[in-house]
Length: 156
Image (tube, rainbow, N blue to C red; front, top):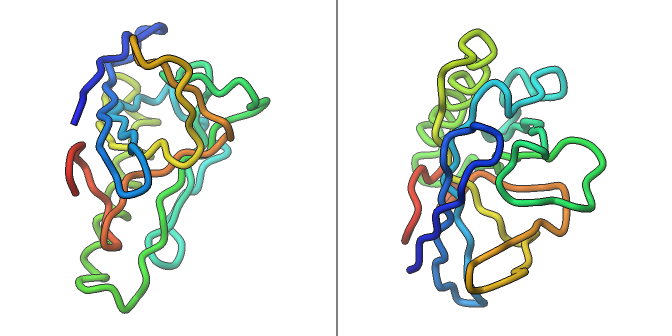
C-alpha cells in the first residue's frame, strides 16, 4: 500500500490517495474533505433511492484529480446495496446518514465531511513519480465493499 498526499489548490482541505494492490491492478482510494463549496447542491440528490443509492454533483475545479473531459459537474455516486446483502438495512441506513451530513454542509459552509472515494475504473496514471492521476470520465464512486460504504483507505 502506498499513500500520496495531494496538495490543495483552492484552499480546500488536504486529500490523500492510497494505492492498494488489487486482483486486476491497483485501486486508487481518495480520502477527501468535502465542503459546501465543493458540492453543487441544486444538481444533487436530496434523498437516497432504493438500496441507499444517491448522487452528488461536485465542482470539477475543486476536485483534486483533474477531469479534462468533463464539461459540467463530476458525478459522485453512492453504489446500490442489494436487499439480500447481510446487514443490508444497517448499511443502507449508514449511507442515508452520510447523505444527510453532506447535505447539511449547505447550511454550514465552514464544516468538512471526510469521505473515501474509489477512483477506479475511470482513472488513468499520468505519472508514477510523482503520482499524478486524471479521470477519464465524469464519474467517481464512494468506496464500497460487501454492500456497505467504506470510510477508510487500505484493505476493506
